[in-house]
Amino acid sequence: MSVKKSSPALPSVLQKAHRVVERVLRHGDVAVDATVGNGRDTVALARSVGRDGRVVGFDVQEAALRRARKRLRENELADRVALVRRGHEAMRDELAERGHRRIRAAAFNLGYLPGGDHAVITRPETTVPALDAAAAMLEEGGLITVVCYAGHAGGAEETRAVSEWTEQLSQERFHALSYRFVNQKNDPPRLFVVEKLK
Ligand SMILES: C[S@@+](CC[C@H](N)C(=O)[O-])C[C@H]1O[C@@H](n2cnc3c(N)ncnc32)[C@H](O)[C@@H]1O
Image (cartoon, rainbow, N blue to C red; front, top):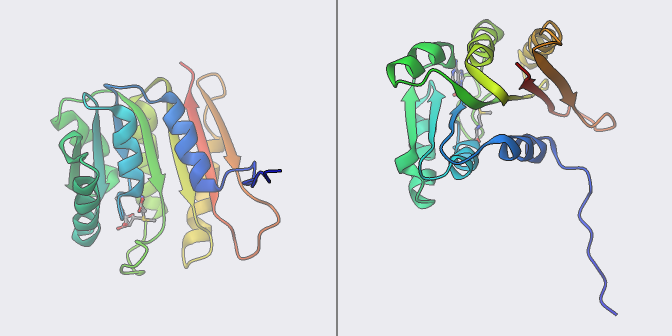
């Protein structure tokens, strides 16, 4: 008799973020990785937009962009991704300069670069304007995902700011929800998902 090995039915916060975005991205779409870091999210977005799609990725650290560039090359996805050394608060200008007025998805994975300088963190004063820009450019049916980590210095404050930002969105124009394991120790990460309705 074969024993079926089961994996948990509930996806992790990062798995959930990837799955919801994969569901809405179609080949040829434009997507934004607002925090490139090591490039794992960038790779996932680049796969989903296909050969004719585009991903624009932002990070303020060259070390992050270097790692992401390598990962994209290894996955043969570099040709559909533009990596920009600029804060995500410049999203609207950067996209306009590239001729993109609309986006289908924007992924934010906040905090510091794993394996990098932990002093360089995302901050509410730039994260919230970037979320405003992403929401303004989002197509109908498009999504914003935000993964927040409350456990590091400044993380709780930023999580609160993101939560408040999602709560003030008009329910006629957006669906917004959060996903979080409530019985995990040490401030588990929290995902916010925003869908543009009209
Ligand atoms: C948690 S990491 C991102 C992880 C990444 N998505 C991955 O798949 O590996 C957060 C990143 O945000 C970057 N960051 C900090 N401030 C930023 C800003 N204003 N705009 C864009 N990126 C920023 C950091 O340099 C860091 O690399």
